Image (cartoon, rainbow, N blue to C red):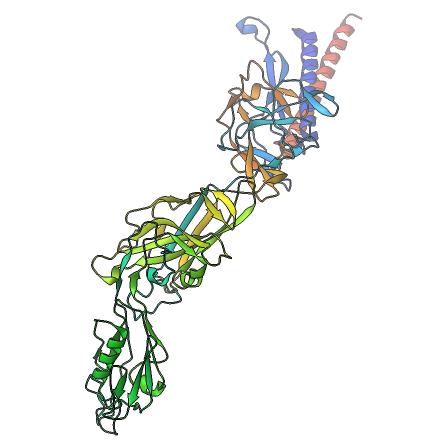
Length: 603
């Protein structure tokens, strides 16, 4: 090539390093540009065709080397619609060709970008800082799945979200194995149970069709009491109702004129030897005689007893027992205070599954609260749905009995007379000794439920597997672990954000957060062969291949990807490029001197 070849090669070197300097300059200029991908420079040697022994270093040319696959740092941002891709992929975007009446008309060309500073414009489009409009796939509000697979420009209108009627209630709770109802008495077996016989005639609250239960005896036991003997010992059936100190008599005497009232019938104490008939008793009769007269007036065939100083009274099956005495001190000497009651078990007619207004206070005393939830009718109006649980049978009563509960929901909080106040869901929930439902009941339907005059349709209460249990609870309450429903009132779109699952989430005025669209993220087999266009966007080329969906990185909301330019690295390149450029100028200077020397030979 000679001297003039050296000149030409040096000029090529200047041109190559100028090109590299231009790339370094652009990289530094865009070091703060969102998601900018730096351009590196590749130098290629140009070798002339010569013999092996005459090979030359040759000239040089340059090419750009893309870094599209090199990610910049992801940093948090305060704007909910900003997003970054952590990993491979590009946002699918389009750019308007023009605007008509302020509405963009898109050119239909898909472009791709890592620039995620998208914000809602006045028309409901998500537009980034370079003017590109985000694409995605709308979400079907019914199924929650993407409605299609082809990306389209996303637009979010400020429309109302229609109200949704409650159709499902998820319920999880533990029922105390021994419910502490208002009327319970731990000393009385079965007192924690609902008593159908205590309700108005024809209004048995047990599940619809439950056969009428036969009445069963109830009992009440007094405290242990001792007599006045020396030394004092426990009262027995032979202990007298009055007597002197040191005798086998109760600690405080009954006197003539005292009374004991048994279910409205009066038993009067008379002077010794003057009592006549079943309604009179001598003051010096024994406890055994007194118990016999009480049982006669009560009409029970189950005899009251005394053992170890404690008297046990029985209601029998004919009547409930209510008994008190005018002499409270002597009554206490028998082991009782105030009015003593014993309510028979069973009774009532066939189960109607309803509690009427007249029986509301009785029902509240025999059941425990089971939680409440706000549900919605077809128009989105809120309805407070309250639940109560009542235990209807207990395994502690012996053979033939199982722990069984009924669930009720409130129909009318202001019910009076024969108006329905509470409705039984008409399902018996039975539990094994392990506290699990046996058999399991996964769900029940509230058929044509009406609460406070508002129709709720037929929502389903879903218990799931083992959702309701019966374990011991010191408080004797229902411990509700979950109670939520799927209904909601109408609401207007307030704002949008980006979810962790790569979806656009709409926030509505009714408190609902719904997935509106799935962001389309494209990947390419030849990422670094994409063609750059203005605004940090890229277009497809033969080298890049077509866009592929489904294998991209993850989208991070409220974040932005920074430029992948490293200023320190660019400064190093700048120094090297400047030195190489200067060296090429030296070659030109030297070649020029040699040419001048050659010309001087001819002079």
